[in-house]
Image (cartoon, each protein chain N blue to C red):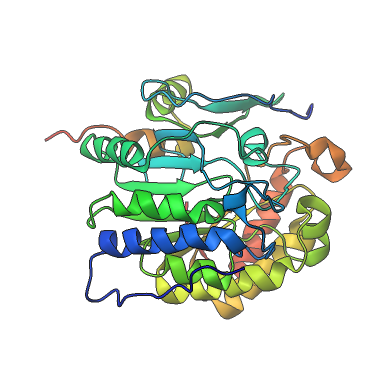
Length: 65
Length: 289
């Protein structure tokens, strides 16, 4: 795995802007940092059987009765 | 020079927000002789002197958003991340902002609290203050607490390298301490994060946090560090903090300056991860997700 270096940047905190970081490994695994709800939903769609993401996606869904 | 000796009103007779407001004032004064973290630099941050963290008197924020990547019992959480840190972990996943206290922007505590309350109204369960390392920005953190309702569940996400003075300011402010125990020995801590006397300081903070709030301890497994870092950490936790919730994380990635260390250029193998879980079971740890 090639080491990742994050560039120095000035981050603007915009209430409309969400940030999630991913590292996709050569074997297909995806590591995630700062996971937001929209990205959890996207990752869940890509791989519905992943338990880690499924548990985080389901906890953010509105309750249905 | 110490300009103000902190006095701490009885938490039983005033609200959290009132207490936080008073402590924020005292914490600002304490920046003139900063001993918030265990480096004890003693610099006057209000006069633009900087210690090892390089932070000034004003806190900047590089993330303020709702996230779902933390412990299941805490999410969704509105995460408020301060720039700057007192440690120098070469593998820091937010190194660009955590090593640079001038990253991000200055937001008023009122604005941050307003966004946090909007997040709570939209379904967030908790509010998490983190960094970098929030301890070095205690005055602003306390101002944010002062602007939040007492009913809000607050999480203090920390590297557990704070001083006794910081703990006095924090007493009664946060419902949950989410604390890292990164290194199982001082040699790895010195080499990878340039921090001396790490184990003693972290253990002192964890014992205190366990007595004063709910405590969740995190350990990020590092490749090649199961025996030197995880095993002693697990053994200490099992012996000294039995039953404490432990989150053993295996998602290490070689971020920031990890390439400076040949042992940190990859990820954690499945075998290492399995071995770490076995160690946790042997130590009868209460693992959570």
